[in-house]
Length: 371
Image 1: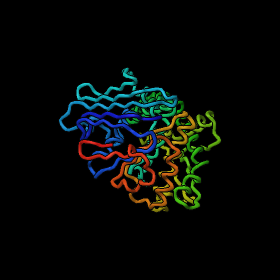
Image 2: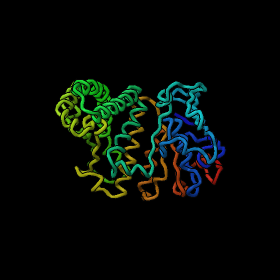
Image 3: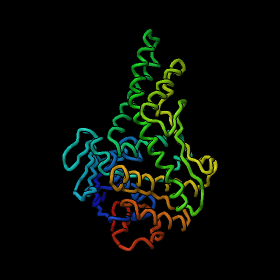
Image 4: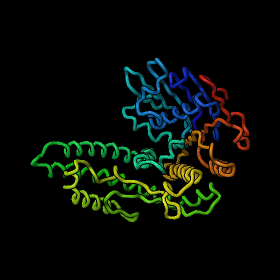
């Protein structure tokens, strides 16, 4: 995939900004607070119809503006010209357009222009709560499998309704009503878990090679899918996962009623990131954590290419500050084999060796930009 140009209007600090991009690496540089990350945020909107910085679209509006507009033109894997537009206003809400035609569902946009993002906030993947690791899985897999996104949306609705039931007054038909929701949780949850396991299996086959290339070390790195309260292994097929969920939901039925919350399913699962069988959360330096996160992103890109035959856009937001020169050099060598890349930084001189074309440099200053 190749994003050729981007136009944003009334978005964050920009009244109007138009950019053209290099097909390989784009270095977006400037002082802090000048809007570098905003450009990545706009690209992310084109891919996933939402921000990675804010839950509410209103926050992305430029001060006192009634609407924002994001438009991008790109080439798909068959070199066909495509376009995506995201429009939001306070009065009309959010609308998405693909090739100038308004779509009924945002899911029709997701996956057309796949994206992977690494920002400083992603340190939460190794050190933060399970929510961030489930989001990591869900964002990637939703771009690859329409069925995953659909199942995830329906699964979340089932959990919401089940929790309402568990928090309601005593019901003589409580067991029967719980079974209705549990059956749907098994149906949608099985597909979610199945796709997650396939991706984790892919990671485990490749993570050591990529991590050691970036770090320059020889480490034993692994990822474990941690199923919450139910048994799971990578050899399980669809029927095995279904049976495991059914059994656990039945066994914990009374406990869930007592605690008034849904305890079983992929919404409670987690990932363990391990270095020599020890958690990255407690046994890795900041540099090792960054090397690991960069490895994950490269493998995300590889997985997207393997499953969809599309090269994703790679967004790297100000993550080079604490990497030494050897790690930066190793990473940039690997990046060249990935999709079109967008890097934000305050120090563009770190990338002198890879920028052979002036079009790769985009200087951001206040409300404007210069290629």
